[in-house]
Image 1 (cartoon, rainbow, N blue to C red):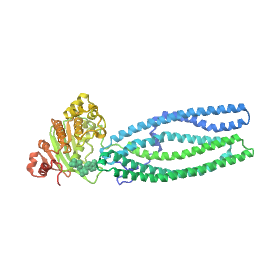
Image 2 (tube, rainbow, N blue to C red; image 1 turned 90 degrees about the vertical axis):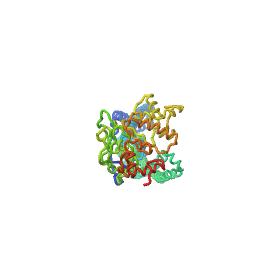
Image 3 (cartoon, rainbow, N blue to C red; image 1 turned 30 degrees about the horizontal axis):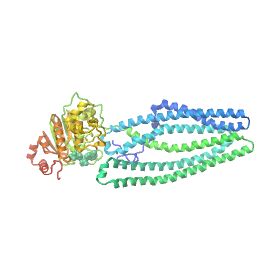
Image 4 (tube, protein in one colour; image 1 turned 45 degrees about the vertical axis):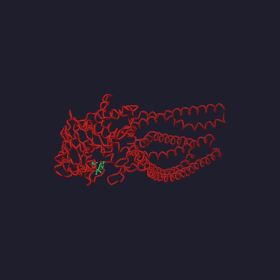
Length: 600
Ligand code: ADP
């Protein structure tokens, strides 16, 4: 099953409707399982720090009353208060350290696990999920979860403790005054919760709009060359600007909502405090309460009010975390349908490839059958050329040999074994692929060449020599340590291709999959690349998407793929005799220079 997500990260079903899943708080907490010792330590420290906060107002009141009695009692009470404060601060320090540490450990572990999950997903998954969105999940969703299961939970417990503890002390100090306070608390908290939800909705809407803009930015910046080529800066800017404008509109409402929220809650909260002050003052006036106890009481009231306010802001954080965790869990629990491991590993691979009646449809485009019953064999040592009009399915066939996708029906086998039963991690190491536009990583040249294996410097140089790349690499100031830039932007097309050939050769592949470059390279470069390719093809089993006449002439077998079927198959000479599609392709090649593009 493919998982699709909309821009807000909600998972979609086949019809594009959002699927609502609530992983629940328990599952969210399960992420913190590895950190239980740290969290317990933090909790213990929290008891200390909260305890000090709960006792402090009482001592405060005692100080006020002691000031009315004797200097000795005053000094003694102040010292105790100081001790309680210092003890509380130390406990706070330990608490904050342990909780934040637990969070950091958790998020580091989660990110590694999540990336591991993403990177092993089926290729089909990447046909539908945007890179920017996946990176966003790695960066910000995990951050939100980190806060939720550590800092936010610690705050939640802390404020609950403070509220409960304070209320108990208040009740002991003066039940009737507490009664007055408790009467107004529901009014304040109900308003806070109701309004808080509204603000929260707006905040989420804002985040979603912002994420849309982020995806736009990622797309434009990662293809900056194409943007420049088509003078698309303004267009990109407009697209991004439009999304930012949308987020700003929500942001405006959010500003108003947040402002009003604080105003309303402020009026209610301070109103409640004033009420307590008035009632308490009355009690003091009537001689039923000491000034010290009133002071303590007021401090408790403030403490409870602040804790309530902070608790209501936590609600929003938790809701955000639930959203993030839906997205994260759907990834963590998603197993690729094509498992690379646990298959058979053969003692050696001869490179006998067989397609038996293979039908295939891209999962991301279910209404178009791309391959409609393809059967052919590639014997060890053979060079098989795929030709035909573009869009016919040649690259798809090559992707299926790598097992990027599984066919809908029919079988693909290697040395007689269905590739579904083989360990893909193993056989992919025996197969090398060089595409028309090879992608290099932003590493050094040597790390790019050795990407598929661990090789010694000599082996790297050897592969580069075979790929006609050694000479230009040696001319760089940093030689093999030259950094190639993102996707190899610092190299020419021909240079990139020769490095890609070296990268393929170094693993000494049994089977070489090639997509011949069309005439995109200059003559000099093309000659060097071609020489390297010709060298690479020698003494190997090769499947090549051919564009050059000399390649098809030399091929043991030419397969003409047209609209997902095999139109013709045979040697170059046989096919020319047949006077069909192939002959027309070749005639066109002689005038245009490529056997690929045909007028259909
Ligand atoms: P060729 O290599 O012969 O030019 P391809 O194998 O690239 O042809 O493409 C065959 C068909 O499959 C085309 O119609 C193309 O649009 C479609 N196609 C290729 N890749 C994908 C993909 N990742 N998702 C959906 N459709 C695809």
